[in-house]
Image (cartoon, rainbow, N blue to C red):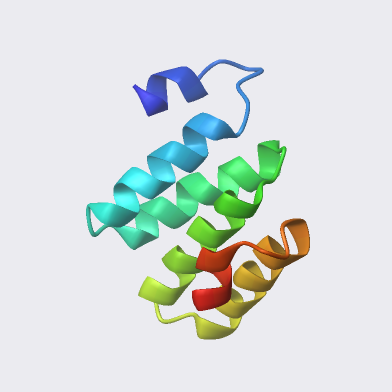
Amino acid sequence: AFRRSGQQPEAPSYPFNNLGYALLISGRPAEALEALDVAVERGPVTHFMMNNLGLAYEKLGRFDDAEMAFMGALELKPDYVKAKVN
């Protein structure tokens, strides 16, 4: 469903973020990263999207990128506890 809704030319970022999160919790971080990258490109970028991006990077062992994504989440919402913990 997330893939179908994202196929619309003017689709917002949310279906891609949701697809990315679903792939993350399914243990498919490389595929999650692809979906989350599309989400960021399409915008609007949200704090939870950046946190999910950080989680994907972390699972892939890209710790510097993960830290940058978590910091990006905190720039968007300084009191976002999940990003602070991550």
